[in-house]
Length: 220
Length: 124
Length: 296
Figure 1 (cartoon, rainbow over the protein chains, first blue to last red):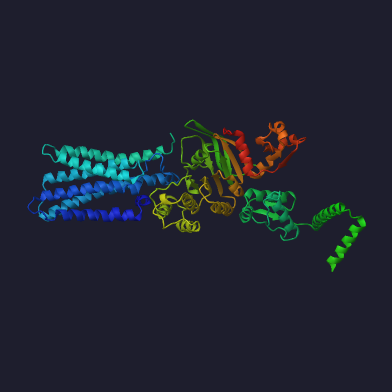
Figure 2: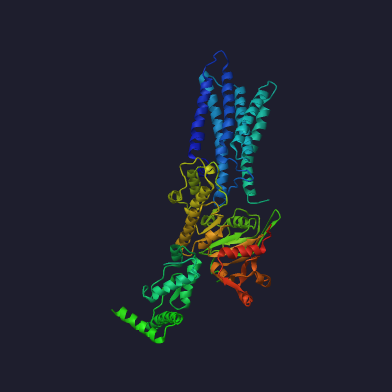
């Protein structure tokens, strides 16, 4: 499976997206959570770190996809010829798509957990129930927005589209966060809906990729 | 091998002629294989089918034999046939000379004289 | 001459697309030779090549490959076929190096060292360009050729391989193809489409001429050159002969056109000369005879 990912992810991409960028994200969280505003409650630090991180991740993931699967759904662009010419092409393509989904999910979950861990270790007490559901909300909303944004961007080979969709997703993220932070919203319901959205968008994007590839065998 | 693109003689004919000359001159021994069709095509910068046609021409003249999957080898040139081939060449050249003589209005005696003089010259 | 061994066999190929119909009753490519596919724009050359290379599956009929008469998705078939397209088909943001890496993963027989050697010999800027997209059109073609030649293939399907190449590179291309066929010793075959038939005549063994989705003429080049003769004559004889002329045209200084060799006797009593046509002349005349194109 790793092999398939290598076809699309060139060494610089792998270095950046698998090592440098997760490390930077965690380091960023740690810096934000350092006791810069000691007057404020620790939850604030955690929220700020999570928020900044989530918005950064959404933008970076969506723009980064340009260098991985940029424009693979484009109608008159790249029709995946180089994959279709190889016996292994279709299966390698599918596993690369799955690998990318797994990478993104694992990365978002682990960076968020690391952020929570920094908060817990830094303050020396356990996170309350509220903070755990907030954590789950952050993770799910980030993943759903990434999945949806990426599928949209793959229709165009132009990186500007990725940038625009990235910032739009960022704006949506802020909007959702603002709405969900209201006291009258039940985070349990929100999380269930988001979890369903995550499952559908993850499996759906792989399914859609394969459907697009099948379509490319037909002119009409 | 010299191939002329615009000589009016088809390329395959030119190849066949030159190979024939080589075979009759004994450059290829009996049973020796001619260069492979595709190898020769590559070296001469021509298409495979052109070389193939040249070889087929030689085969039709009985100079070479095709071996399935191995190529074309040179047939034993029995001396009688070889002589005949050479005779034909001499005849051709002389005919040409005769034609030229006719144009020039030479008499038969004059022609013999030239031939004798040439023979004497080449013996020297 | 009949085709002894075939490398690709197509039967009853039919594909309709936007009012165009590709209809090839039977197609046989000779094994160990280079076959040229010639035709006007829109004649269906690219469509035919796409079907053969397995890039499109929406057609009726069937293709079988190699001696074992295998289908395109049978094991080992795609491995033995090298294809280059009219436009480059790698991910546009890839570097040349990444193209090599990807090909290594996609094809068992890809030799990376050989690829870089070929890339170097063909002067493809490997390290100097940011990505494949920014290569010149000629270099894109050369890059595709290099990836294909660095593999162990038995059949090359090349869609317009020389249209973007300069004259010297075209000559070089012909030499590469000759070497490919010569190395294969009867096992390796090439099938290419082209508009530049005059440049490619030196490597063309078999020719297929297409028009409006159908095959008009096909045969080994030397046979075609015997089948047709090129006739030139006086204007006054044109009307009497035009019935038999293929792709004939006439000016006040005389006419020229193709004639079936079997119709040679029609020339008797007319002031006309005949010569062996080049493949280019055969193609142009046959196409002209069947083309919807008109003089303005």
